[in-house]
Image (cartoon, rainbow over all chains, first blue to last red; front, top):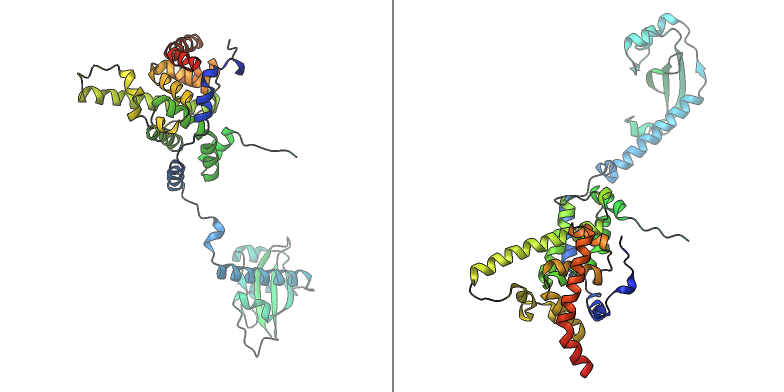
Length: 161
Length: 195
């Protein structure tokens, strides 16, 4: 087998080793190769690059407003629905219609729906498209959510106060 | 404190996933030895640079596909560079024959021609220059073995892997190459001793 060790190197080559040992490929080679690499692997756009800074601000505001609304609804006192027969009508009741979050069949088949309501400052809902003017900036909006027995939201309605 | 050095395989995997820094690290790790081998092997700085560039370009484009299960990346790169040099020499010899078939020179002497060898300008040390000159006169298959053994500190097995020959062949090529070198350098040694 190979019994190579470093002591049997020919001293004749010492000078050549010293001379050649400090040589490297010209820098142009590395530059050409890195350019070729960049062409072959163009930088990929990451998913979060598709949003502009303004888009991120809007998304943040919307998320924050949604979070406030969800918290308000979670801690709001529950208003029991007085009559089960009224559940289908509830979607069209009052001034503003409910917005269905599930299919009509699913809502109609719900045996024990509950209504959860909360007053939310209008300013926090501006990002969701609720109109906001200097005059009504201090108002609140009544948010009502129809919730199924399993806790799944069925429909939602915002009532201006 | 611990230091972590990425292996060639890690860098290669990252390079194939598009990490430019991994490719640059691989290049910087291997370009020096590869360039020096090519420079001594073919005697031209320009050709050596071309060989290094083509070797790494082949790695990048996967024209030369490296399988980590079949050996070290360094050996693979040396093997590719050697094949590229052989290919270049074959083309060069064909060109020489077409231009001047009656020149009558020993083909090996072409490699030793200082005017055609920019490496001569890089080496100012007399001893180094003498050895380089003698090395350039060796037959290419002896030169491979001698350069890899003496200049790159490679084992017989490493050289066998790079040159795709068995270890016995490496041993005999190395022995004959060194003997030829000793003969060619005998005159110069005598002069040095006399001085």
